[in-house]
Length: 73
Image (tube, rainbow, N blue to C red; front, side, top):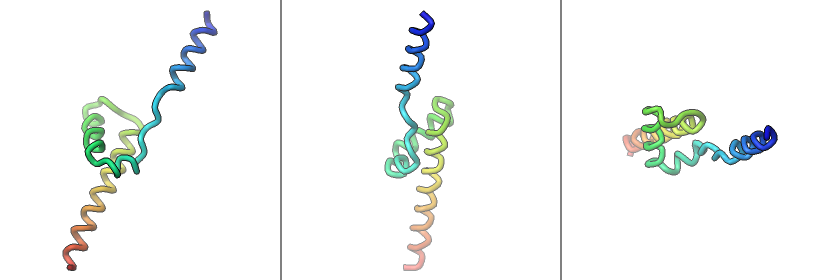
């Protein structure tokens, strides 16, 4: 019985999805916003929230850079 419980626990833990990367979130801004909202509510946490925050910062930096460059045109 113990072996069965141990095997079941190992199977379930191995089936968890990997957190999406920061580059994924940079490529999908709407998903980034949704994930950040979930993280703020506490519905998500961990590496996926960290990656979404990093991507959000990168997206905002790119937008600021584009606006800065536009000022010199």
